[in-house]
Image (cartoon, rainbow, N blue to C red; front, top):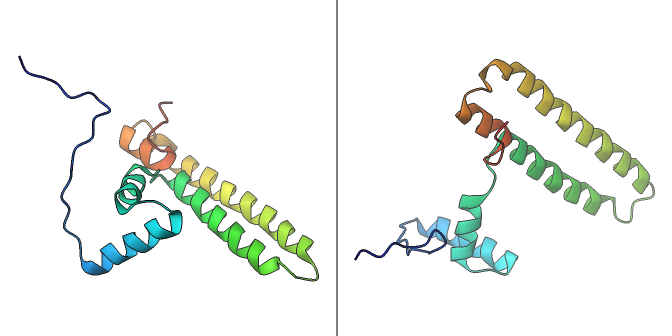
Length: 120
């Protein structure tokens, strides 16, 4: 009788990468407090859609601007700029989706725009 692996089973993967890439993965993993294996898993499972990219970009920019605004005489202006920045990014996403609307019936195009979880 053949035993089948469950859908949640893990398999070992041997992966060859350059020493530089390994150091980058190691540094990222250390910064996140996880193993290199977990870092690679998270990178592979991450949302690589346009929407996901814009969200990550907005979060990184927000963190950078908030960090630079600490100790500022007028932190409210930084938060106002961030609100405008977020609104502009959402407009970019909407504009791109409208341009590609005729192509959104293609599952690959839809996944690239919205991510894996979108079935609409």
